[in-house]
Structure formats: C-alpha cells, structure tokens
Image 1 (cartoon, rainbow, N blue to C red):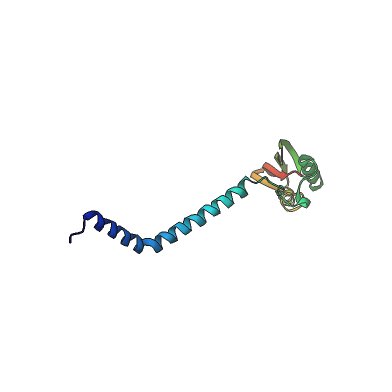
Image 2 (spheres, rainbow, N blue to C red; image 1 turned 90 degrees about the vertical axis):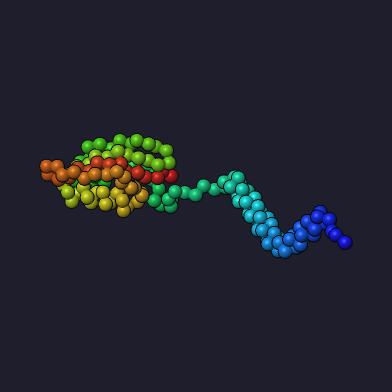
Length: 145
C-alpha cells in the first residue's frame, strides 16, 4: 500500500509541529509578557502628572531679584558691577554679568555666588586680567520658586 504524498506531508508537518511546540510556546509566552509590559508602560506615560518635581530644594530656590542679590554681594565685597541685566524670567532666571575689581574680591564673589543660597551657577564665564585686578564676564543662572 502506497501512501499519498499529501498524507506524507501532513504527517511530517504534524511531527515537526510536535517537535517545535516547546520553543513556540516559550516564544508566544514571552511575546504576551512583552505586550503586557508595553501596555502597562503606555498607561504610565499617558497618565496625568500629579505633582511637579521641583528643580531644586525649596531652600535653594531664588525668591527675590537675582540682579539685586548680586549687586548687594558685590557692594559688600568691594566689586564693581559694570553690567547685571536680566535676560530671562521664567522658571530659570538668567542674569548677564560683567564684574570687575581686585582679584581676591572678584574670585571670592564668584565663589560665594556658587556656594551660598540661593543656588546660582555661573555659565559661560570668563576671567580677564585688567589694570588693577580682574574682570569676570558670564551669565548667572538661578531657579525661581
């Protein structure tokens, strides 16, 4: 008795499906897990934001005028403020600076700006030697409450 080619092919296909069943089941299980994780992450991303995380701790945020704060510190340190103009007033406050004075006083002022509250960072700053001291040019950046 001769078996038809279709029966031989069907039998071979069933045997192959039986051999590959464990690998296929594992792959389908991993695919289902990945899809569930994707749905979960999509829900997290699309959920409304409940509370904004502050950029800095409240004690380090700027509460007043940054330019006035810098002028006051410069006056008490013996530094001349040639320019202190506010560039931005959103969440980040940027003040363009040009300060000059004795070397120790200018460096001490820059150090106190970066170390003391409110949190101020000097960005793009440059020190240039001038007659009788230094000139500091740059931008002071702080976070407004």
